[in-house]
View (cartoon, rainbow, N blue to C red):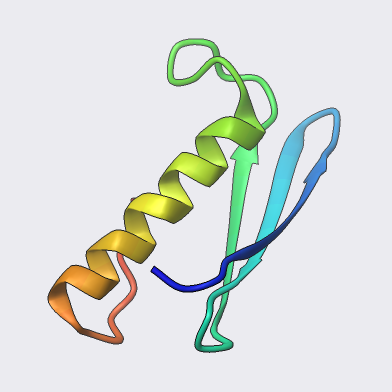
Length: 68
């Protein structure tokens, strides 16, 4: 896995995430800042989802994006 740069803005309602992958591709994500039935912490969950997507993309050697 190459370099991954992540910027997170946690607001009162939503947590916005922008990541730059090692190939320069930008990935964005928006999560509810509070959703205790699905995750304990929105920034941590966003990073988990991004890593899952990066690993899936490398494993399948595809430029497709995955909806997690």
